[in-house]
Image 1: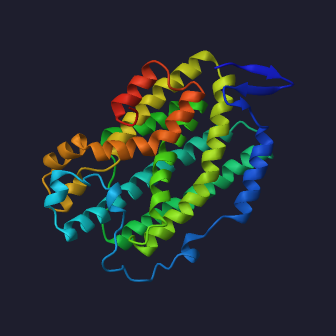
Image 2: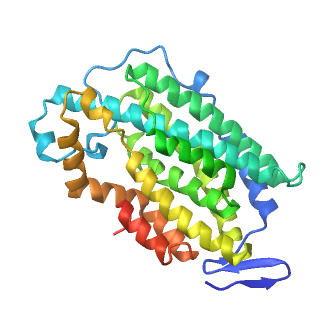
Image 3: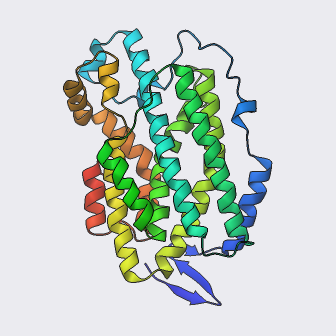
Length: 309
């Protein structure tokens, strides 16, 4: 990775970085045209549809395992309902962290800048997304699924000590894998209409969030001190491991009448599941590799997470 300063511009392996204010201005324009109020946009009073999934079966953790082949169609659909709730719960946890990281990022920046204004716009988006996910969980009748206590408390530390590039790297980790799955979900007519509506809104609005985070991470990786870049590589790799571990709460399996240990073991051994997770992370890992994040220990941590071959 090379860094070139030219008329106050920055360049990395992907080329010249765009002006921060211009990027934010375009994102603000997009937000004005393509933002949604889920309470008004979606029909929350419509009944749950018989015979429709809460998540595409191919994206379920147990799909195509020996245990899956023994399950009835009703039990498979129940698994989808609970896994959707688990993913939505994970999304809320992550978005609460993200909102706090964004507030920290803009704390010392110009309050009248487009960059700060867009960050506040994104925080408003994430507030609506978290409420939308919570409402979807309730609509499906499944419980909420919290991440294990150790990771819940580890996030308290992250919110306090995370570097700026580390914050944006973690943001992309949480956004891009779920975004890949949701892009497969919202056009899928086998899926509940309310779930398709939720994922459609999230995909449209998260595209802006990903753009903002990618642009800022590129900037940070060429301008931050060396120690900060190295810490970002390690923290990003560890975040990938934690995220992969928390992706589906194992309590899901017990709640649909399965043996927890057997289910977890079969998910870990599943080639299909491994391919799904790596495909979901593929665009992100390629980007992180291009900008110099996937080096040394970071790459080894990503491989241990199962998100990188």
